[in-house]
Each structure stands twice: as structure tokens, then as C-alpha cells.
Image (cartoon, rainbow, N blue to C red; front, side, top):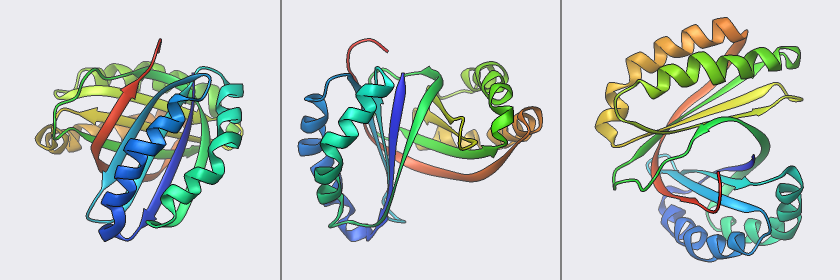
Length: 204
């Protein structure tokens, strides 16, 4: 499985309009693309940030969809976004959520590593990180992505509500310390978002 992420930052007062456009027209456009397997849409309303992940059954499906959707995606986000970053990933490990209750949240951690350590990082994510995240109370979904050539990875963890997210911060910090030591990586950022929507299509 492969993923494309879009990270957009802009005026918080224009965020709701961007979310509505993505949930309606954006979702419809995605569903028409061959190989589409799901979407996650996450927001930080206070800071004016959007994190979007789309799932694809193959690298080719992801690439073809980007070519098909690039112009219209930019048009949908332009009224809100002052900056937008697009990244491509392979899925290293995932426990995709079922139907989420209102109030679900996500913690997004970005890491960097020497590309020579990519296999070590993937092994750490599939083993130590996945095992301990699954044991944390309130965790309802996990996704771990990697771009081996660029030496970057992302861990997204969904929690059932903001209270569970808050209670997890200490345990998550300890896990990050253990994981970066074992995987020879460094943390680029840690952010928290509201879950706007998640969708899974077909297998995976």
C-alpha cells in the first residue's frame, strides 16, 4: 500500500470552507481514481492546519492519480492555504480504524534518518513501535509511512477522544525516546489534530 500526504497551512477563518470542499468535491474526485483505497482528513482549527492522507493500492495508482488531480487539488485548497507540501510514502505498518466517534484525535510524529538505516527504521516501526502503541489505552488506529530515499518517516496515531490523547502524552514521549535510539533517527515534529473524517475503500 502507498500513501500521498498533503500538509497545508493557512488562515484559520478559511479552514472550514476548505474542509467542506475536500469532504464533498475532493472525496468525489478521489473515488473516481483507479486504485483509490481511502482517505484521512485532519485539522488543527486553532492554528489553521490541514493534514490529508490518501491511500493507494500501488505506486502507479498513486502517481497516476496525482497527475489527474494535481490542478484541481490546488484550486480547492488555494482559498485557504498559504503553503502546501505534498509527500509520497510507502506504508510500513498500519492498523486502520473502523468507524470513529465524534471527538477522535490524531498525533502526528515526523522523523528523519540516514537512508542507509531505512531497514532498521522499518523493523523498529513494525516491532517495538507498533507493539507499544497497540497497548496504549484509547488508541484506535495506527499508520506508519516511510520515504526510504529521502530518509523520512511519519507515525500517525488515532485516539478515541481528546482525553485519551492527553493521557497518552507521557507514554508517547517515552516510546519516541526508545524508538529513535533504536532506529538511529531524530524527531522533526510532533503535532496534534482533530479527526475530520476517515474512509477505507476495498481491501487494506
